[in-house]
Amino acid sequence: MGDFNAIMGIEDRVNGTVVQENEIKDFRSLMEECRLNELGTVGRSYTWTNSHVYSRIDRALVNAHWMINMPPMQVHVMDPQFSDHSPLCIELEAETEHKGKPFKFFNCLAEHPSFESIIREGWNKETGI
Image (cartoon, rainbow, N blue to C red; front, top):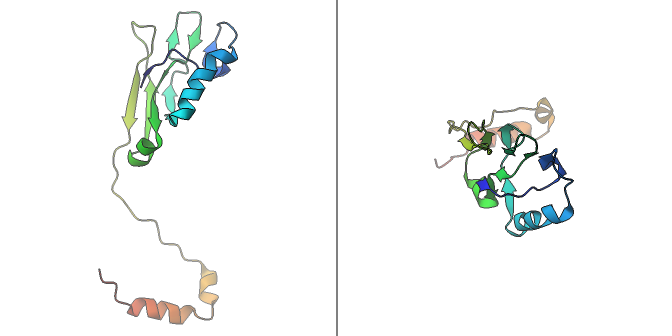
């Protein structure tokens, strides 16, 4: 997470100079080569301003290992207060008690010729739990 002083696309700057390909290619290449992804954000759209130009240059980047092993999270782009940068705050979702998937039964299964014998076999099977 940090100030990368780079934009990734034309939507990352408002009211400044026209975004040129050479401004975005290096940062995009870095993201691709390092296999990084940006965490989703909520709040302000831009993280830096000089009161005329607004840019998104502060980001929270993670790799696939992080995304697989960490709980769902989002980045809050907060009000800048006294800085020209908006602070970022990563919010992890609270761990919830794992509840299994709800049981679903499709009536069409009961019409299968082997339905009763399969159910009977399943009920009589020892689980070993």
